[in-house]
Length: 330
Image (tube, rainbow, N blue to C red; front, side, top):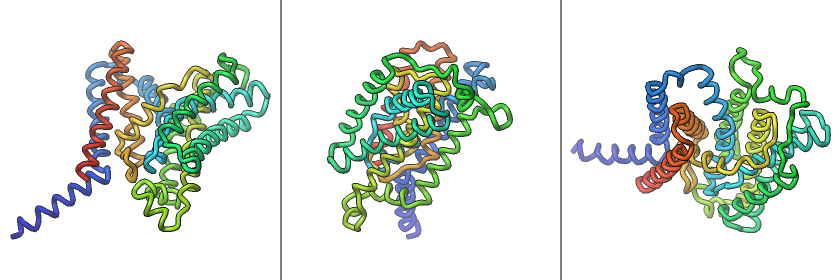
């Protein structure tokens, strides 16, 4: 009799673990460790500090983009505009600082506000105009790409004469060894975690993704909160754009396409469900590290760029497939 009563309990616990995304986060962390061990064995240069620093720096941009889009995906939406949106924020930062001669801090705020505006327009299109998220953000992706080229004249904007701008990402105020961009990334993780776990924004984000109709019937203004959530995601895009501009010491108007796929892959690998209602920023951070370690490891092993793209494509495919399996088990 005890066996009969314990089996359903064990099954329920397993389903709860799978549906919560905790199991996928554990597997993601285990995968990260396995990748680090494999590439460490494959190349003696992998664990050199200069390479680790490069991995962390490459994680910052993808990671911050992924943090923002985690909010959107938890609601059951998607945001394809974050890559070119990041580029547009970089270009606008360059316009404010280099072309208009505004102080650096004003230009940085202007870049982040540009990202927030992109997110707001996407949120308005999805919630008020009722355009499907895929189409709305695809359109915004193209708009941002076009505006980046038009505003910059299809030429890079250089910050070479802007004192200290490069130090925003590559300088170091902590231990003299950890780049500022990495610290900013972890600060953004903390801010995102607080918003998602400790505020009404997070509560409504999960509620909308779990059951939008029930949330609406409970008296919550779905349209308003969707716009707020997309705007918050846009702020993360803006921060990523400023960091990218600082890293390169320039705003590259042709850069950005494809970043959205890696960011979304990081979100899904980290345990956030594409169907909405479940997600974790810690998992997203792990997913972003996996993407960076994989790309860096393949590069350090001298795998051709085209094959690196193939591998990353398979990783995205597997991430979505496992998300489908988890949804089926839940």
